[in-house]
Image 1 (tube, helix red, strand yellow):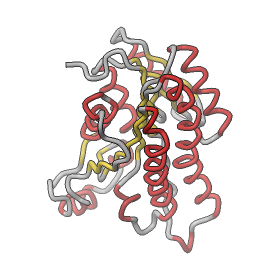
Image 2 (cartoon, rainbow, N blue to C red; image 1 turned 45 degrees about the horizontal axis):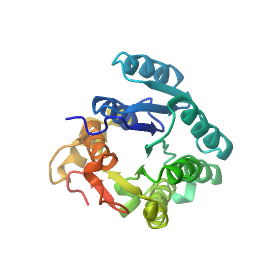
Image 3 (cartoon, helix red, strand yellow; image 1 turned 135 degrees about the vertical axis):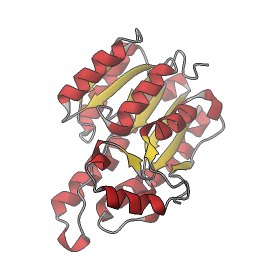
Image 4 (cartoon, rainbow, N blue to C red; image 1 turned 120 degrees about the vertical axis):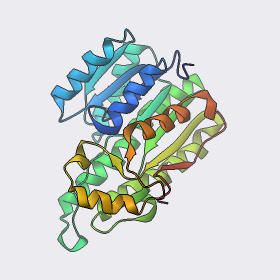
Length: 247
C-alpha cells in the first residue's frame, strides 16, 4: 500500500543520513520528491540519479535554506517544477559541539541559522502555497537532545528545542486551514556521522537504551511517512520521539 501516492514532497538536507532515507521511503510510497543539498554536491547529484531510476519524478536543488531569500526561491522553483507542494520535511541540520565555556559566537550563530532559522524560512514560504490549497503537512526534525538537553551541545539543543516550540505554534496557527505540523525527535541513530565513533563508546550508549540498540535511519523515515500521510490526519502539534525508549 502506497501511503503517499500523488503527493509532492520537499525534503531539506537529503544528500545523506536520515534525509536520504526519508527521500527513498517517500518515493517507495509513491510521492514525487524535491530535495535539497548544500555542501555534499556529488552525493546530492548521485541521489537524484538513483531515485530518478524508479521512474518517479525527482529533483535535487542546491540551496541554503538558512538564507531567507534562497528558501523563498527554492519554494518558487519547486512549485514551478512540480506544480505544488503537499509535504515539507525540514531535516537540514549541522552540529558544532563544544562546552559552553569554549563555544564561540560563530559556533552558536551557525547552528541556530542552519538548524532553526532554515525551518522558519522554508515553512513561511511553503505555508503560503499550502494555505491557498487548504491542505499541507510539515514534518520537522528535532532530536531527543532538544527535549532533554546534552552537555557540550548547548547550541544544538537550543536549535532543536526551538523547532519544537515553533512547530507547536505553527500547528495552532494553521490548523484551521487543514495544515498540520509535527516534530520527530530521533535518538541515537546510525549514520555516516556515528560510524566514525569508537565501538566502545557506541556500546556504552546502547546499554542505556531500553531497546538495547542504536536506531536505523529507516526507523526515523517510517515515522516520517506516517506523519506525512493521511493516516495521521488528526495528529498535529505533536513531538514523536524515535529513540528506542531513551526519553
